[in-house]
Image (tube, rainbow, N blue to C red):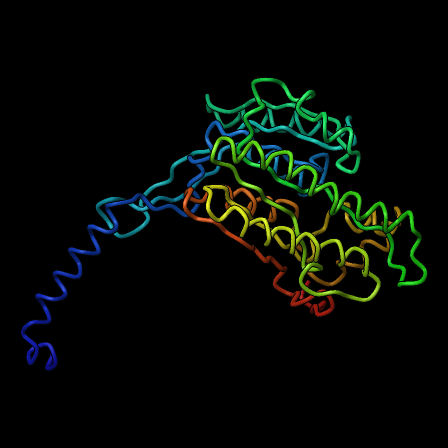
Length: 319
């Protein structure tokens, strides 16, 4: 109180500050998760038959509930339900894709939204050049105008060390994780440039930031994805096109089962003793990145379970 008494100008300054802050707040409705920007958008997701791809497709299809900041008050005041996109689901497994598409339809129906709600499935192996080249022949005409590309397709085979890796394994990983991603991106980037908008979201990994023993090829592919994504972002800096890489740590999906060639007990040990991320956790990061305002680009989103600090550093006594 003594200080304020000696500074008669302070109350006036505080009043001006409050007035300026009030104008700044009222100039734009702020939200924790404003998915209204996704209304009616068309999203293509590769590797959408399971795991992160499936969870992402379903989340794009349905409503998100977000808290908004009142124009006249400086605190969160109400909840608004917004969202709902069209989704093209791509993967090799047709039967699994159909089930995910059904889940998308149900999720959208439950939302009660009138916009969005168109879902199409396309059998696609991103490693097959002919299939990639003819992709738009398989997509319904009314979904050709894609706004968001989610390059999720990818996998890892084995834990063999260099010298013991089968050529078929490293060729397959590079064909899908790197060459397939590049081919799909090139296909859509031309369209994004033509319409002067678009968003490329690539699934990277903690393995693209730090290599580890027994993962030389997978780590190499994800380092390549990170470099490619970073270069792409710089190449389109003079356009409204956004480029994002999502880099998850341990996510409990089919990923480790594939790595251990179907050995679920070995896969389960990867997550033993800790609480790993889920496919839904990463889907939320992808959709959140896509829902940012057009002038905001999340270049990298690095996401770890709370008990993981790197590929090889994890606390396993917390679960």
